[in-house]
Image (cartoon, one colour):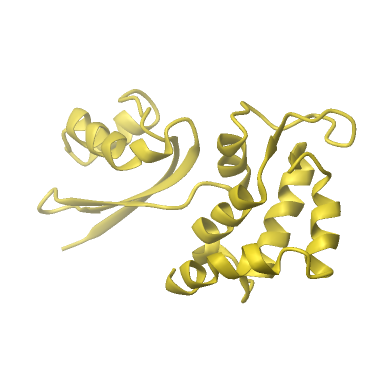
Length: 168
């Protein structure tokens, strides 16, 4: 039973049956409307964000399995800041502000795809991305927050999330 894998990047909860997905699914004789509805259902929690999706199709039986990846760090941060897109000039134009807890939440969400071992280093990585796309954290430049983390200023906040980090 040959299997075919299709990898696509979609907007969560907003997949359309048109090209390029529709024709691709049609060639495997799948019900395009049904597959699109299922993809929209499983990606609904990521509405408005770009999310990777993998379709594993059994060519003989026409059965398929949908796997949803984790949205990009930028997408998660933009959603937390209620911003539409990154700043074209992050050094001079800020597009929003998030809390340190928001950054910690994004780090925990992204843990499976991060190479860091500790919550502290994961949060610092997320803060770096926040800085690159033009976000402030607690109304400060994320670099300042990184320096303060290195000085031990947020140990109490980080320790509150440590258990959640280890369970992911």
